[in-house]
Image (tube, rainbow, N blue to C red; front, side, top):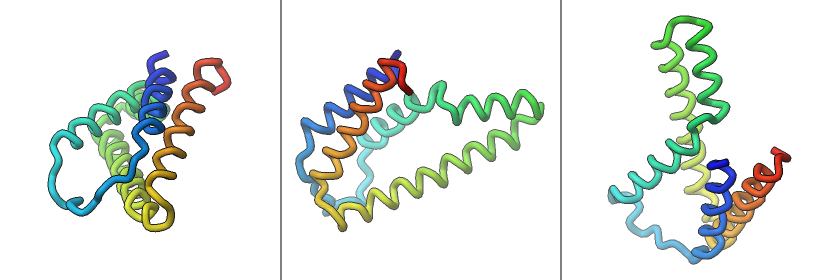
Length: 118
């Protein structure tokens, strides 16, 4: 129940605050953004199919270190791909459209999960 509501809340936030972002200082470390991203990803992945797959592999193989290394590597590569696309996409279309599209998808996914279609 938490994940569908989180999708709706985050999607709504994306739609409301869909203003243009200024990326002129992208290279500076923003610890607030890092902590927010960590928290969102942590809660989004809890009970997700990625985590369930890692638990299943660790239980069946009985060797947690290789399973952990593989899961961490897979998540790292998928995150690098997501961040790379996130850097290129604003060059193709306005950031406002991206945020509105992402917000709409989050709201729709959350609503579908709430009604049991997902």
